[in-house]
Image 1: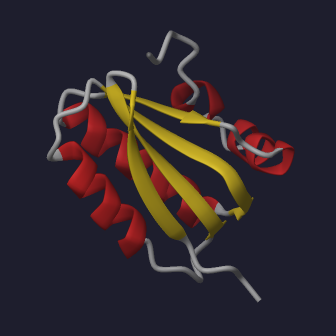
Image 2: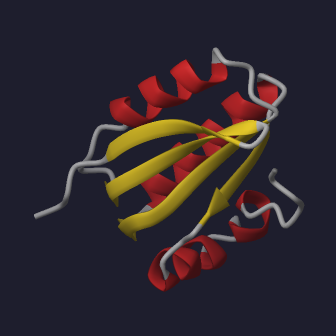
Image 3: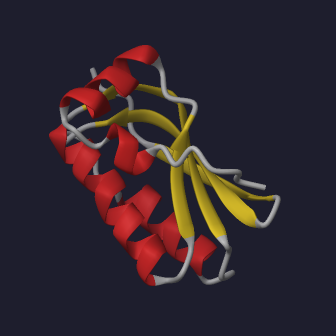
Length: 109
């Protein structure tokens, strides 16, 4: 059974961090992520950090959700970075060819 995705947010440095918990898969609706990101982007952060340390499973739909979130953030003028990925999640992002796009190595605070 897949764990439903949960999202919470808190200010962090010059930006906001969105903490994800659960599985980023097609079986889950991404409304919690979408609502949280919309609320955070209303704050006009310089950086949107998405922490995925509590995500154990990600599929192509989950990768798509991260890419859509990145697009929304950059269109709002915020830098976007995914951090704290579990090895399986990082590998999935790497195999999909999006790891370097989502993991900005610059300073985030």
